[in-house]
Amino acid sequence: MKLMVVGGGGREHAIIRSLKKNPTITEIFALPGNGGIAQDATCVDVGAKDIDGIVRFAKEHAIDFAVVAPDDPLVLGAVDALEVVGVPCFGPNKAAAVIEGSKVFSKDLMKRYNIPTAAYEVFTDAQTALAYLESAPMPTVIKADGLALGKGVIIAQDLDEAKDAVKTIMSDRKFGDSGSRIVIEEFLTGPEVSVLSFTDGKTVVPMVSSMDHKRALDGDRGLNTGGMGTIAPNPYYTPDVAKRCMEEIFLPTVNAMNAEGRTFKGCLYFGLMLTPQGPKVIEYNCRFGDPETQVVLPLLESDLLTVMQACANGTLASTEVKFSAGSACCVVMASAGYPEAYEKGFVITVDEGLDGEVYIAGAKWEGDKLLTSGGRVLGVVATADTLSAAIEKAYAQVEKVHFDNAFYRKDIGQRALQAGK
Image 1 (cartoon, rainbow, N blue to C red):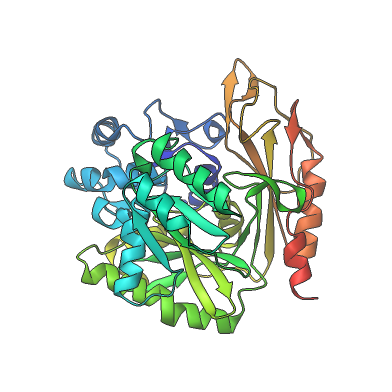
Image 2 (image 1 turned 60 degrees about the vertical axis):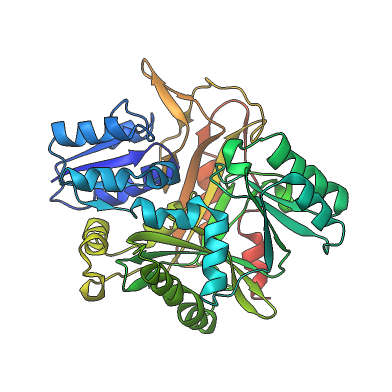
């Protein structure tokens, strides 16, 4: 089989490494891929948002199955376009991907179908939003409606910060047209949990839960990033919580999308807050999370391609999806200055004897040297029988990976280790 994976980050590297375990796969193409992915797949210089280019490549190379991983091409309709030319895909179509593509849609969906989430209001002009904030409880959460590279959410601690957030999103258009509408919602408290799930539009099979670390600096300080590390499983996500989420959130969401004529097939990501009133949805993503994928897939014991095909074919209920009972930790190594300005072009080296996985997010080859080319450069992942052992092992492997101006958090997983104490 010839496979095509659309995307070019650490998430896609993890997906490709997992897919490669299937012996029926003869070749994997990554569009566009990156320098690290080039060691595991054939990289093709076609951008993830170049839908015409993606379709043209799939036709010319007789691709048997495609995995569309990032949010942008999904929201733009890459799956629809590929299926028109007969290429089966893992990922939702355009109508279903709107669950991430529009915060307003997803919040209204939850309200219509009584799926627990934060109370909210929608605004289409800055002045009305600013007037509303005068009497809104603080802290509050302000979200751009559309996609914003995972950075279109601002938690405002007081009225001044909230007003600045509205100005940044709606007036300054920091996130472009994604900020033409905003959602202002209630600030929830409690442990956060990420749950990726496989679904064929009828059956929902949650993957191992995980905990992301969004802030750039130790102690959850600094700016929000795309994610500085993850652990799995999340100790706050107990069997009782999982059961409640399936009954109150997961199945109702899939059923709601069916009722709307937007059947969702692929990976549906549930960002949850375990509040004193019970689990509530913070956000939906229409795809694998990054860097959650990097800790979830190494724990998958079933064949990933088989599971993805079952999602596309509607046969997930009769397909085994098994995860190991172990734990995983991912430490993201980034370029100093990320998520703001940072330098590129530093040589990446890895010592011999690395015991784990290195998933490359931002790197390119120049001659025989692998150079940094992004803010989040790579993720070092280790698995072990216990969470504490996985964390210790991951940090031991980080010491074997080198590039100038590297920085990483030293406390990934520490919050999770405190959960049981």
